[in-house]
Length: 182
Image (cartoon, rainbow, N blue to C red; front, top):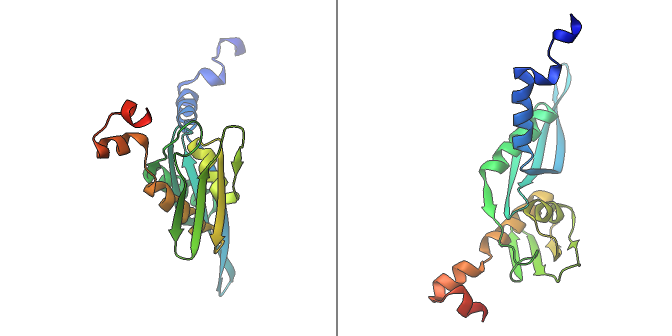
């Protein structure tokens, strides 16, 4: 009788879960910072958590999110959901960025420079996570000023959003891509 039952992975319930897991695999999720804060109450300390995550599809779309909750997994889940809603496009040219740019947010500045193929990602923690999630394979970067990870992420995204891709430059100049590249 035991052989007549379906194996566990073939039941309907598990099939749906596998589809959901496969759907999430299209995005790369990186945890940049997890912070624990304590509130002192009558019975002792009450802990809450905040998470900063970066999400990307390795094809030029990347986003960041910040979530808070009383549980670590819930804070990470909230931040990933916010990151998926706040995705921006990252222009990629031959595995690197098209031009040099400086992104600023408060007292943090991030310098992003294109690099030739084979260089790799030369970047610190938060910037490295953003570039890996976005699909950049070669880049040089320098974080200048305050090293607060929240502000470094926001400065990097400020630089990315100011970046121009070839199609928009050609359109603004009224030329075709072939004329622009020669």
